Length: 269
Image (cartoon, one colour):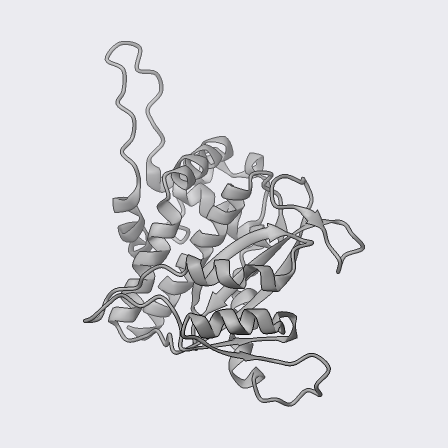
């Protein structure tokens, strides 16, 4: 197994979240189970390189692509990835590395070559099948939550689901925190209805107006969400959607968000 794919600090955080392996039968137990760390290395290899599951180098990683895919399926269904992301966000808040006062949202289109759930004709890609990644980040660009929709869904439809997807973040004294004080967004979110809904939640909307010349100054804060998309799409498996199952692609998105949070922790130590 390549140690650079699953470094110790990542494995120490993932291992306690994994479901226990099934018990082996006393008679005819079959092959030995592939170690979980080797299976995670296979998942990380696909996430980083974007190769097909059948092209995972089993001799190098100690895990075939089929086994890695099955563990991804099982661990996604067990809710491992959102719990990993939440745990890392809690560590960041405890270390005073999250700024939840100012948050930003945006969406990014990706092609969906094999169809599946949450796929629709993209208005920016000649109606080819695609999906959208919707992301909310803190002032530093740390991903707080990510959702997946069809490529024909308007960004503003995911504004409230994104806010609802932010987990309650502990790590400091007092109540867990899960909403920003101010929310920055581009012209795609310019709807008075959603401004009113944000005000009702106690969130000040700072959304660019359609038809107004550029230069409002909102970009000085909002650019971090575009950088966060660049970080996400450094994981080549996320640049184009190949998974037909939306939950598996969502799981890879959440794993990538967790890795970005871990990198921020490393940089601060």
